[in-house]
Amino acid sequence: MILTFIGTAGSGKTTLTAEFGEYLRENGYSVSYINLDTGVRKLPYKPDLDVRKDVTAWELMENGLGPNGAIVKSYDILASKVREYTERIRALDGESDYVLIDTPGQMETFLFHEFGVELMEAFPDALGVYLFSPEILRKPADFCFALFFGLMIDLRLGITTVPALSKVDTVNDVSRLRKFLDDVEYLTARLKLEPSTQGLLAHKLCSSLPELAPPTRVLYLSAKTREGFDELETVAYEHYCTCGDLT
Image (cartoon, rainbow, N blue to C red; front, top):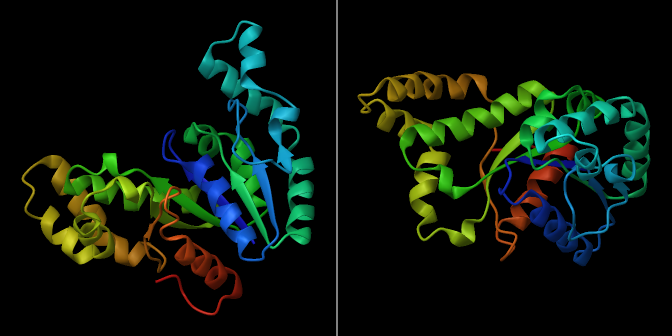
């Protein structure tokens, strides 16, 4: 099973990758880790495949590039090695029960660069886990944005993607957030009351979600407490065995 963790910087991808992998190993599964971040200095897991062996952003910065330019340049270099990485990931998938892919901290690097897109095109059966943090959910339109962005990742990478609220251990009242994330009809009804142009756009978008989005459920995860790990494991199993949808 290939699980690809995707999210913005600070959403907890790397920590969750390490902790979920440890959880799986404790439950008797074999796990391989893949690091695709050229800019990370330290990792809480030992990668079985690490792009930093080919190029690092900080080495490019030493040659005069700025942070953003170095990151983009690093993936320009990696783009020529997509086939090689594909073969190595496929080999790890054959050896391990789970292959956990930790994507770059700068999510746009993976989503908009040909390296990330071409890599995932080789694994259409992979499951994407889109992580977003509680702090971005301030108003009803934010919930619509989070749900729709997961759908956009699905569209861009061509893999089934489940949205996951990370760092739930930092939230005082998760039930309030679940009202908006678990019930699109409730969210749409609330958005209908928003008088702003933003609210109108969000209402139109969320009204179309039931028709556009594949059946899935939002996950609620914490790398600190391991909350939701059992459900993530279940969703991965359901996705790969096709014994049910992801609702």
